Length: 393
Image (cartoon, rainbow, N blue to C red):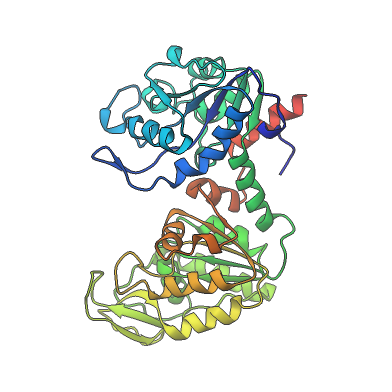
C-alpha cells in the first residue's frame, strides 16, 4: 500500500469531519437484518467524536433510482441503530445543506444515492460534499471500488482528505495476501461461476503456492479435466480458460486439486435425497451441490501447514441443507488453523458467521466487490484518489 494520509494521525479538535462509511445493510419492513457494517464503522465514528470533531456521516443504502427519494431506502433505521451503538443521538438530515455538525454532534445525511449525480460522480455534488467539512474521511471500503461523488470525487476536492481506520485495516489485511505473505500461501476460491472470478484466479495463481477451487467453479474445472458433471452448473464456454489455468499451475509446480468425491442430487432444494459419489461417477441427471468427505480430507491436508490463507466463496450450496457440510467443514478447518486467514466475499463471510466462527479468523472483510477487485490486482478509484492527494503534500 502506498502512503496515504490517515485519520488517526490528524488533529480533529473543533473541526468539521465528514466520514463516508458503508452503512448499506439489509433492511426489511423497517428492520435491520445484519448490522455488521454499522458495527464495523463504530470505532471510526467514536475516534472522530473523542477527538472533538463535529461529525457528518455519509452512506448509500440499496439501489434507489438516483435523485428520487424512496422511503424504502431511507437511512432512518441506520440512524436509530447508530444512536443505540454510540450511546449518543445521531440526527438524520434530508439535504446536503442541512448536514452541519458542531463539535460533539453526529449527523447522518440521508441516503447519498437520493442525490442527483452521486453514481455519475458529478463534480458539482462532489464539491458540495467536500465542502461540508474541514476533513473528508474515506472509510467505506465496501464502496471503494466505485468512482462515485462521495467515494472518489469528494476526495479530489476536499481540503484534507484521508483514510479512516476501517479502510486502512482492510488494505493492510489484503496486503498480507498480496505483499510478501507468510508462506505457504493458499487460496480457496469458491462460488457459482468462473466468469465472475476468472481475473481473480489468474492473478492469485501467480502469487499463491496452492489454489483450491470449489462450488460451481470447481464443476467447470472438473469438466476441463474431462469429467462428466451431469446436470450441474457449469460454464462450458469457460472450459478452455479453466484448462489453461490448470496447465499454468502444473507448469509452475503449484497444486490445484479438484474434488475427488461430490454430493449430488436431482435438484437444489431442502431435504431432497442426496448421495455422495466419486467425481468421475456423477450421474447424467445429477447436480453437484457440495464436496464429499474425501475431498474435505484432501483440502484439510493441503491447508494443514499453510501460513496464510485467503478464502473467497463457499464450496457448496451451503444456504440449502443438506449441502452445507463441505463449507462448514472448511470453515472449521480454517478456524483451527494457525494460519492468517482472510475471509472475503459476502457468501463466505455469511458462512463463517452462520457457523459462529468469525472470531476465529484472521480478518473478515466488509467489502465483497472491493476486496475481490484488489485481489484481482486492480486499483480502486477511492484508493487512487487518496494516494494522489497524499502525494501532493
